[in-house]
Structure formats: C-alpha cells, structure tokens
Image 1 (cartoon, rainbow, N blue to C red):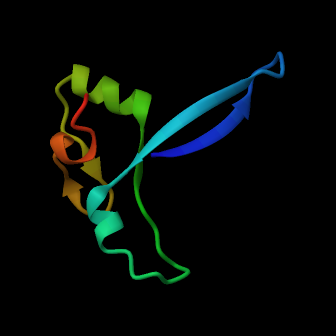
Image 2: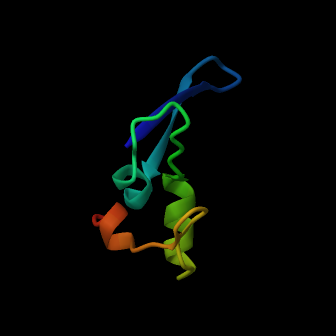
Image 3: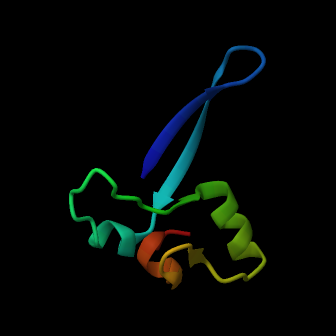
Length: 71
C-alpha cells in the first residue's frame, strides 16, 4: 500500500493511503514508463458502500477480494 503525506492548515501531517491495482503490478516490466493505477482507500470504501464496481483505468472491473480482501 502506498502512502503520501499532506499537511492540514495547522501543519499536522495527514496520511492518504493508496491501494495499487494487482493487474498493473503484475504487468510491471521495470521500465521508466511503468504506470500503476491506484485506489484511494477512502474512495474505495465509499464504492463498496454504494455497491459500485471497482474499475482500473487500464484493466476495467477488478475484484475487491484481490486488492483489499480485508474490506
């Protein structure tokens, strides 16, 4: 899971968590142009609540059980 740090107006650090598409990672050819689609954890949780399909921009619909089995 990737992590990016951002600060709020008070200067406190906030943590955004991203989950990579398992198919993008599997296709990694070690080139400099490698792009892996990621899902913001909070947005992913909202999609689950709404029972919406989870889609990678490159691979289409992906299984929640494969990218985040604990959700």
